[in-house]
View 1 (cartoon, rainbow, N blue to C red):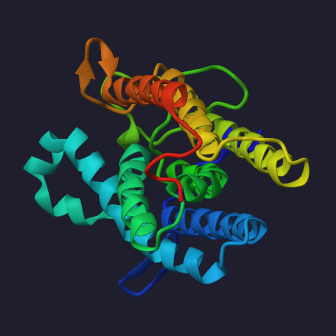
View 2 (cartoon, rainbow, N blue to C red; view 1 turned 180 degrees about the vertical axis):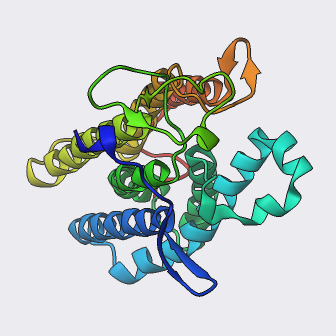
Length: 269
């Protein structure tokens, strides 16, 4: 299998002092694919494409700052010792939980500013976000990060010695957790897009916001279980990785919101 023998490199091309990274390429491709999905769904819900473009310019900086801050805070000892590394975001280090929190804050402000339904916009963004994650995870592969425990499976990936945690120098192949998450995120995208199809084409009564809340639950379940095999260092709280604890809190909070959410809410116009 290709993944079993290929050693990825983070740089696509170097032009003098300027380097172009696979990580940045896949993040850009994920954003582009998500934008295409968002524009198509917005058109179906009779939301002007200009609003979606403007929303994009709200979400990108908010999501980026949130993603970077979350990563830095969960690895604060490393960045405290090497503060200049904070600026090197092109080498990786964008946490999806931080991106979600940052984007949600921007979405709340945006929806109130333009008197739009927060829940409807969140529903439109949900499949776009899942597809963007599915594509963006391949950037982690080329950075040789976020891989899993050693494995003898034929799709195990080789990792350079410099990128392995201490104690794993004698193993050859590791679980491609980036691939697992990419495939599962794509499956989540299909589910969410299918729910939009049922709502638009089949006139199924799916309350506003439920598609987004389903995304939060599905992704959080995926992330919770994948953390058991991921090897990246993370703070432990109650014997759970920080990302697992956040995922559990998101699942509990989302289920609570679903139980009390009414068709008309402060976010629904």
